[in-house]
Each structure stands twice: as structure tokens, then as C-alpha cells.
Amino acid sequence: MKEPLRIERVGFDSGAILYDAAVIETPQRSMFNPKDPMLQAQPVAEGGRNAAWYVKVCGRDAVLRQYRRGGFVSRISKTRYIWAGEHQVRSFTEFDILEGLYQAGLPVPRPFAAAYWRLGPTYRAGIITERLHNVRPLATSLHVADCEQVARSIYAMHEHGVWHSDLNAYNVLLDEDGRAWLIDFDKAHRVELSLERRSSNLLRLRRSLAKVAGTEGIAWWDGLNRSYAKLIRTLAM
Image (cartoon, rainbow, N blue to C red):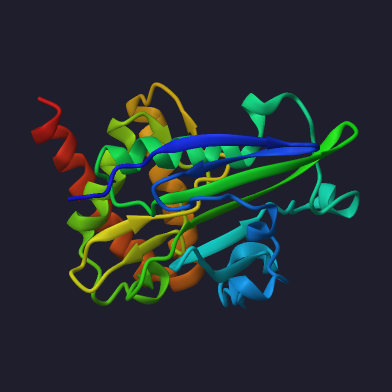
């Protein structure tokens, strides 16, 4: 049985931290600084735009991720976002979505803490989540990945009204039992998920699989799509 979360918030001069008080007794801004020796930070090898680290937080294995921009806008600033109120802070939004999915029993990492720091009209942000051990990305595991297991995890997420904005082959992780875990909910949002929107989300994964695995990836996705359609027919009745 999962240990329940106890969400609390603490403010400081330039920002705030949301945290799980069942895990973190005294939240510190230094928890979000990978240079702090207490974190024993090690860079995550794949993904993360060089802004993700494996860390130790309150004796637990965790992943620290700082929010970084991509594309053209990153030439202006890689780490700063326009301030539009705390309710639109990206780390807090992701923390909230993870909290809801985790509490509902879905296969997502437990959120430990999220923070932001303001500077004038902009802010920086970071998030810390539970580290999942003995998992491999779908991108490198198609030969053993069970289409139905992955479809069930995505279907459950959709049933809880969450649209994953970056559903790619590296954000689906498979554990030793074949269960599919979903990670990286930055820019995910809650929305009424029509069949069209569900299909659009699945097609995002198809493009990713085609990119990393070519025809093998597309063939595997076809099986996933059939499994997802079967879940809709049987579970949504």
C-alpha cells in the first residue's frame, strides 16, 4: 500500500516550495541546487536537456529536474519563464498533476517537492520526484515491451483527465514486471479527453517510436493502438 502524501507549502523572499511532508521534514532551497554536496548529484544520461540529476533527498533516491526551454526562445533565456501567477508556475502544475495521479494509484513517480524563484517579471523552477529503479525506457525495450501493459497505463492516465504533452518513447519506462510507468509531466494538463484528443496523444508516441526505432517502432505502436482501442470498448462500457 502506498504511503499517503502530506502536501505543505512554505514561502520565502523570492518564491515558494511545495513539498511532501511525509518525506521532507524541513524543505530547503538547496535541495534544488545540484552543486550542493548533500545531494550527491549525478547527471541523468538520457533526456532532460542536461538539467536532470539523480540525487539523495532526506535519505531517498530522487530525480531533480530544473526547467529549461528549448527551441528558438531558448536563445533569449534557457531557464526563465514569464511570471503569470503562482497558479501557472510549471513546477507547481506538474507537482499537482503527479500528486493526483499518484494518489489515484497510477504508475507515476511520487512527487517530493517543487519550487520556483522570482526575478522581476520572470521566474525559474525545479521539481524533485521519486527515482524509479530497475526500469528501462520503452525506446530501448520494444523487444520485451507488452503493448497491453503500456496501453493500460496510458488509458488510466487519460481516464483521470490528464493529457501528456510529451508522450514519447523515453517518458514511458518499463519495470522488471513489465509494468509501464509514465514520467515527465511538464506542460501536461487536465482536459476533457475526447476520442480525438486521446488519439492525438497516442500519435505523439507513434512519431517518437518511428524516430527511434523506424518500422519496428511503428509496428509496435500498431499493437499498442489496438490494445488501447480494446480497452475503450471493454472498460468504457
